[in-house]
Image (cartoon, rainbow, N blue to C red; front, top):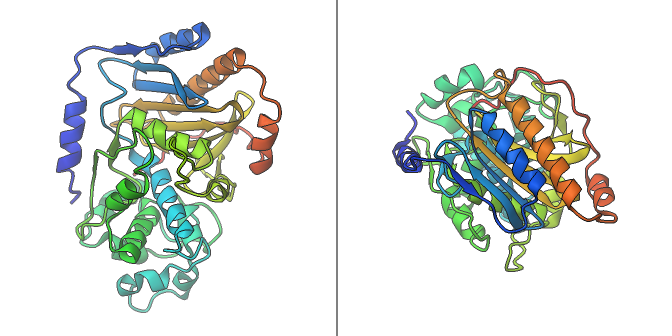
Length: 368
């Protein structure tokens, strides 16, 4: 059973505000404010935060929600796990994406394990290409009802070859949380607080754990929209915190944003914990959590956006995800109209990660 008392408390506190809040930091353009005014019509939407070149230029809380209150970011937390893996590699705790996971999780391997388990790598887990049956979607409840989530994830049958198609699975990112915990002797929450200490405004308010006390890699994490924005800014700046500390290497960010597979639900590209697509003609990297918890980074414009939503209903099959992508497109257009030209910015961003075509939307949602 999921241990969720701290998360429930944090989210209960987040619900205290009785009225909507509107923040208009100095520098917000009229076009951008008009976009956020119209976004009131997107009923599940709770907050929007927009930053350009590291400065928050617009914030909006809808229907009593605040940009400073904790919210469950759901599967957007998979990008946080990816970052922690990258820092661990930078620090020599892990060897790299090609490192096999079996020796790192030896005590939890199933008896008579499928030989293919020995070939699964850290990179396969990050890109959702482990080949193991998904623990998300219809399988999620059964997985989190097991007595040992690590063993249950490793015991899933192979339904594809390692490194082949993308199989979106929270079990994969939970295995990464377990690996980080065992290699460092610290919890992933402790690592996040220590390694991201230089990042202003970043804070994890609450996070569920499995029966063995391992923090759930890739779901049930609470942080404020401003905190999620601070996390996104770390990627936009090439891994550098506001005080100049290089928290993670720029090489890891480039590696994370390199397309390795495609979502079978949307057709969007996927790297290491990040989706990739074009929106409003710009290459965008985004993290996506169930219900519409979104973090968008648009390097060509120096733009970072956070949108949080009601986390009790899916965003894919309801069309809410489409509405959020459309809102992101309107924000991109407004910011581009207000911003001076940045020679070479778009070219540099596209050379690092080629633009991903925007395919028709499907009914998928990044389930837990």
